[in-house]
Image: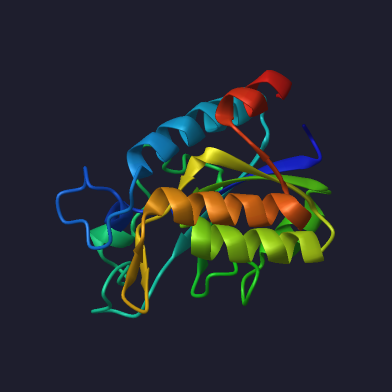
Length: 185
């Protein structure tokens, strides 16, 4: 476990329907964070490498507005003392951040990735991580997304999610469930 890090990407209030002022609700965010919290608990008990990543947009943005309560990490997986929190401005968690330097300083070789959105920041971050040579595992039931629309066609979140998990599993990551991950941790 010493060469593995848990990346918790964008589990922020604006994605949660249980957050009163949510600006960009996802389908299944609560369930995904509940599963992620189980993995987080194991990492904490074993003094594992934990990195929280949060996205901030400029003030007065549609969601994750800098300094807003919506941009804060959700209470279900919020960082505790001595856990690293990285703030990003792009879907790729490595772009213009010190994530790679932190992972390399910890001698991390593999990543367990949870968070949101499956079709955006999970996808971009996982692909970048693989390109940097990390062995990646995405936890399918600890990630969430939303319905998308393309040229008038509504694509339900479950299909968006499935398509991106299948795509990542094809060449970029092992895709497992929380139960599978917990068995091997």
